Length: 132
Image (cartoon, rainbow, N blue to C red; front, side, top):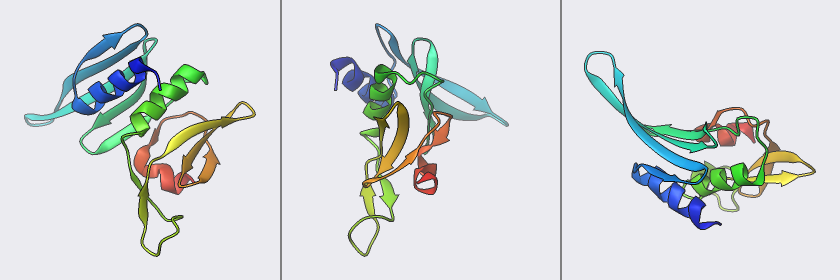
């Protein structure tokens, strides 16, 4: 993993602004209803938001760009995530780190060795198991 990906993913999960070359982490407060506030963190690549989180929710998209850099930045974010996987080899569900892989120009989301084709549209990490 490139240094810029490591630094950006750490900034993303720590909620710290970051900018280097084509990659940026933005943090802002989104006002909700009667005085409520929600902190939103975005990972931006070439001006396109490819990952964002708020509360306990993480969303990713490739914005239509199936490049190795986009995949690497998303995998950098996903390397900090664990999802409960029903495909583990133990009787109880085991947490697994999801990732994005490419085969024959198609992108796939993988969790615990199982994979499903992904069209790159926005998907929540909590939906990964349902998608596979």
